[in-house]
Amino acid sequence: MSDFPKNIARKAVLNMKAYSARGGATDALHLDANENPYAPPPVIGAKNYNRYPEQQPPALVARLAGLYGVSTDMVMVGRGADEGIEILLRTFCESEDNILICPPTFGYYRTCAEIQGCGIVEAPLNDDFSWNHEAIFAAADAAQNLKAIFICTPNNPSGNECDADLVEALAKRYPDTFIAVDEAYQEFTTTPSYTVKIAEYPNIIVMRTLSKAYALAGVRGGVAIADPRVIDLMLKVLPPYPIARPVEEAILKALAPSAMSVHADRLAETLEQRDRLAAALPSSPFVKKVYPSAANFLLMELSDDAALFAELAKRNVKIRDYRATTGKVRLSIGSPEENTIALAAFGINQTDAKTDRIGEVFRKTNETDISVRVNLDDSRVVKINTGIGFYDHMLEQIAKHGGMGLTMTCKGDLEIDAHHSVEDTALAFGTALKQALGNKAGIGRYGFTMPMDETQARVAIDLSGRPAAVFKGKFPTDHVGEFPVEMCPHFFESLAQTLGAAIHIDVEGDNSHHMIEACFKGVGRALRPALSTTISMDIPSTKGVL
Ligand SMILES: *Cc1c(COP(=O)(O)O)cnc(C)c1O
Image (cartoon, rainbow, N blue to C red; front, side):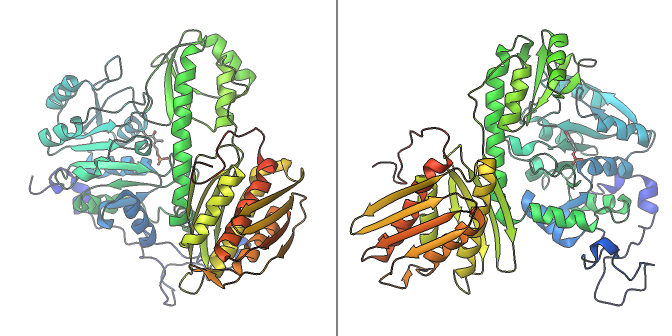
């Protein structure tokens, strides 16, 4: 055990010298890797595309270690979680070795074992898809040279999670066998990751992916998380330069700190849609049973599969067909609109179903890094963080009075002043609103008069597609908190520019705070009828009462 993991590694891997890939381009004159001195033509100026990337790009490793809450020496970044599975077997499995799987489960464990030429031992799940502990222990006890036990939790395709004590019990009983915990769907559950157990059990290895919760399946990115000694050995086996430069760039952009609030909103929506489908599908004439799921899909047993597949074909909807192996089908959770189409194929018509007119904008410059998500059909979530307290409060007023959901994160150069942050968030907000309105933009003119104590603001808005901003009013002070009052008219000017609207504001009063607040509320009020397709029963105040 003291020698773990060398005692169970392939001898060839232990004895070989790692292929020496250069550790990325430096500021030296690189005439060492037979690279081309010129950037490839269509992407001239692209960051070093003519140069080999780092074997494990440090910025990416740091970001993913941060994302998963582990140290950087516990991470191997690869082309998806799939590569972690493959490299684990290539590092540790000889032909006389075995792995253990619990079918029905993710098919790639078997594929990798077959390619590697090692044996496969099975301990099938119970009929209700719970893990059969006795069968797992019996099979593991009997297996020769058992190198890995794969536990996929939540399991694909059944969607359920293993019992809380299983992984640890296996790790304890089989110290010279990897307990490979595939957490491809971990984000969709509330169960904590098994990464926290690695310090105590160095034979636990966890696979995570960016393909599911972070919408990066087309980019290929995932990690194996393990004891640093395990990672060291696996890195000897990982092929040269697995992470292409554009891949690293795409992942770092998609996981920018400012984007995380949008990921959280999307995840919440997926979980809500999972509940919606799980509640509706049992009443489908084609469905016998819907299994509970802790992932972003639902497994179902059908009562009339021919009729269902005919309906799906009519609508050109594809679901995963496991009828041959388990007699079941798997449906991935889509967007609200996609799920309405899927439900119709299942014979459930939700014509009044929620639709989401959503606009999302990610905007990064040298001065600001911004993400905005507006939802014109769901006003429940309003989460704003620009670093400027008063401005956050004003944006909340627009969202609340406009009857929209608004998530905005801005990391800006506030050490200089609020100017760039306010201007750039206004531009991004206008773009997101326009995107969410889609082809309904330019439908009308709206006005609102907003009195507030001694102040009155009159607002008129025309979603004409033509930007114009007119602001009349003089503020008695030059700041409210850290917010420079001159940024109030500038905000509406920037918003008008990207939204494609004429915004006219006329404000009178003696108190800058009241005056600015009245402008933001008034604009929200004038926007509300322009944006809404239904009468909202919300109380139009951020205080929740009027
Ligand atoms: C989707 C999936 C993977 C693959 O993840 P990638 O990062 O895309 O390679 C791994 N394991 C399970 C259980 C999956 O469902």
